[in-house]
Image (tube, rainbow, N blue to C red; front, top):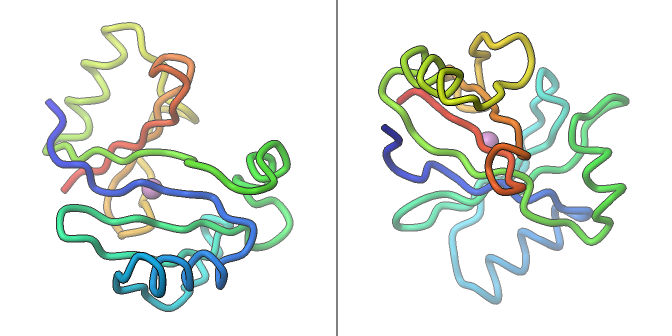
Length: 134
Ligand code: CO
């Protein structure tokens, strides 16, 4: 059902430091920080040949990633995002299998302007999973 790995999101305490490490030490192209107020994050995209890395840093008062960074002050992998062709069909299949969809179960518009859903980490080996319709 799922297709490509769209991105791995890493919550970071210092966006500039993370961007500099990937640019200078790992030698990859790193984008400029982008504020996404609707999602409560500032994002830096790192383009790899086969996928993307997204650095996430809290933006505003009620950032959804602030609690994660409080628990993981040096940062950490926040979620992985898999591509699906039909997000409603994917959701229904997952619910039928017993997986929990976060929120009200309706897809939201994600950071790339496409429909996304998040699945409960306890149902996926301790990893928050994002599905994005491509
Ligand atoms: Co994501």
